Image (tube, rainbow, N blue to C red; front, side):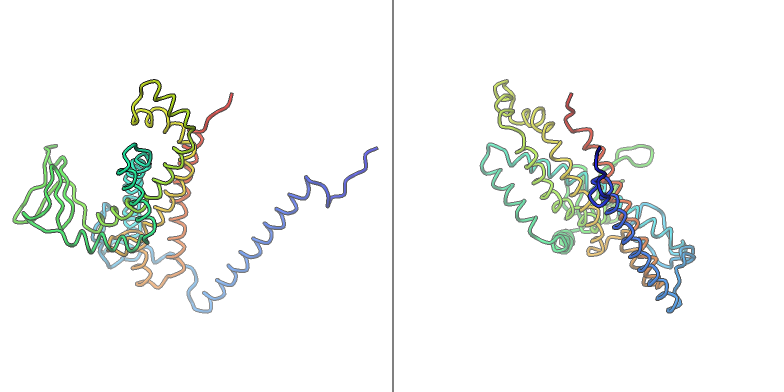
Length: 326
């Protein structure tokens, strides 16, 4: 007859007891903090309220895709700031992924000079704070650009102190390039110097970390794969694109998830170069309304949802690239 196992030695019961105890402790701690917050707000006469979101904002937003005026409510201003943040994040993810992948691939080039320059770039950019880099790109580079006919003119692109002008389709679906009107550059697509400096800094900074992720993923592929591809007559670029990178993705994608989330959070440094994003609008809203708790909760919730969305997409991609055993 089997001797019953005491509950304190039961391997099925103990995990549930530990998880229950930890969960109860967390709930008690959260309840204590919330109770303390409510008591302090009540004493200060600042109970949580969201009615101020419908009040006129009273400020303008310099650059936004979503139309906004000073007479519009605060919630629309915060939404316009969120659109600006999402715009920066999407463009930053695309640009840093492309540049980081190229840098990671260049680390395995047969050209020693190219490998050396890649390593110098990665180590230099990774070890300089992002805030300093944003200040450099904005004040030293973009604000020093000339205007008018002295602006930097490339095919379909003009880079001036007033912004970055890109050719595109105008009215009547006519292709229009950058052109001067009364000494002022005009183009179907214009980026302000603030947006250009922020995007350049984010791409340059994040691509250095992504390059290391890509380099680690490529290094994880056995050397025999390179030798087999070489024996088949594939070039270095063909070997990377058709043989190595598809196998390296299962190592690269989890690391990319972390870097993408970091880029989304780093976009809040847009205030350093004067670009209007969610954080800068929230800061102005807080100064005008005095609703610190509500504004901070909105910021926390928005960035949390944004990061969780990125993580959800990357986890789905990670499942797709993993090798399935039969």
